[in-house]
Length: 269
Image (cartoon, rainbow, N blue to C red):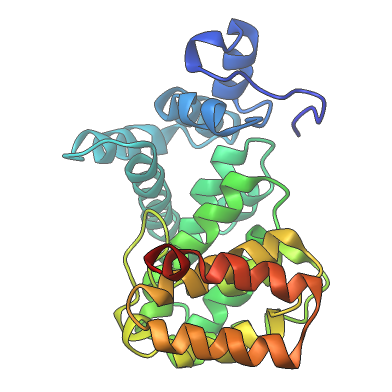
């Protein structure tokens, strides 16, 4: 696990060679986004699969990466995860997912999210149940990839997903509560938009209403961003929601959310 005292370099060129070696060998976690983006996933892949005695997986996964027209950290990440899923099925490999999701490297745990998110043999309820472990991960990168990995399934099964995620809003872990909101943001970041929530943002209220005065800033930021997303397509809905919450829950936590929720509308005057 990462050294909590290490802040991480501000640019890739400033990452010490020793740290980069540790990142690419999977022996340490990235300390910030700069380090996360600097990881060479091809090198990491070879080393991790060799460590796990899965050398026969290296060539097919590498070939899948080669076929990518656009190679970014996210497309490579997803391709590795999806190909490992296919290989685990082909070889009846029942143990690789656990090995990946408990690995010391945050990037490897990111790969693991797709072994759940892309598994079409799982129902949406089963996917969410299995992804919760990674949604609670201590590393920011794993948490982001976790909701991205199940985003398309959530879109396909929106009502059922919202029912499950509404239960998550009462979880003691702030990361899991944040996932409940972030995974269904209408616009989201680096992901497909949820068109139904852009047109019908009220569908998300069972989740949002439970988080309107959350004790965690991490969660409040997500809720505020959710409503700010919605304000770009359904401004009246956001104004009405903020007015209602201000009456129902006039706490400093709720007022913080309302400020973030209204920032686009406030700029418009």
